[in-house]
Image (tube, rainbow, N blue to C red; front, side, top):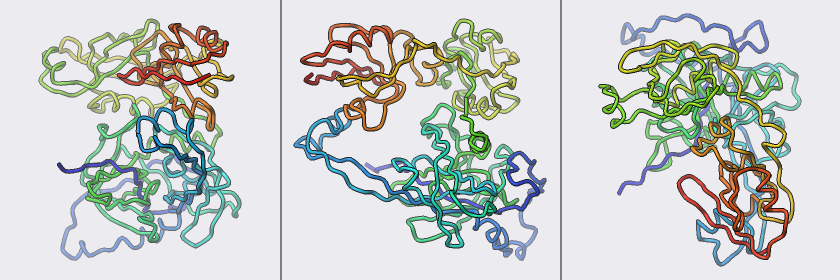
Length: 477
């Protein structure tokens, strides 16, 4: 059986550090360009060198040194034991790991975009960027989103006049457009590859509900993570992040995060804000062949509205369960992730125009994009104490929380975050875990969880639902 793997690798694709009158112009319209095949054999011999000369200075190498906790145990090679119990047993030890990726400077002041998996586990003091001109600087993480795999760094020091790339509109791309990639594959040094756009709006390979990717055949390899994908106008159209490979090397199937999503994170980080995704108050699912047949549709595409929350924006706008969303602002959407991506890049405070099929007839819906309601004071709490959930933050399962973690349940308690180095992390708790029971007590809300953890037990018994499995944790008190 052939082994097939998805490998996170990003590539630095850069085509031009355009000099603009504004130091951080993320929203300038792209220069208009005619798209046509080469008119002659001589035209094919033209070089990308002028574009590379402009782009290369804005592509950086990102070096990260991190300390990794390991432990010696007779069960160390058991994947389930390691995944759920972490370092709770055995003899802990520490080793230093180094990683290498790429990044792209997007303003004069030294704002760098890269992937979160490039800087994962590194502290600010351990992150360093190296420019093409051999200058090196420390960098600080100012924003990151693990689900989107986007991180924003700020270069410390320098003269505040760094070379940078401007963003282009990734929605203007077409299959067949030429692109370049610049990065540091395998640590051999800055490298440029060329290719075309192979496909757009790839959503099957993402982990987040708002991830879609640009597919390219430009060579992308390990070490390219966080690099730039650029078009022939010399502007940034994507951040390379992943390849599909059987061997670990490039086979011509690479994926980049579209610049329209990256730009939102860069602009928000530059203003000291966190990206908030619109909350629509509905659960969307990808169309399946069975559902399409049941609805009498001849196309297996679109996002099915499977559930609506009372008083949510979608219900107020007129969406109904069973509606199939086919377009957002006139753009085809193939599944739920494509819908969420369009709404996220549209932004809170805007209104999206949805086209839905209802009883086979098209209906237009105007959907206001709003932020998710904030949890109340007693809806979420940080847990601390002499118990296995020390260091976890838990929340009642509000509609917005259910949307965030893609939960079907509305009753119970969900782990929303786990503090690094805490007991909860060591015992393997993860964001998205639902606490079903503690001891003999079923847990329906945050208050019940706190009461159940208040008295120390000789044997802690905690039931956790993760995906479609219920895990049983038993730990001496």
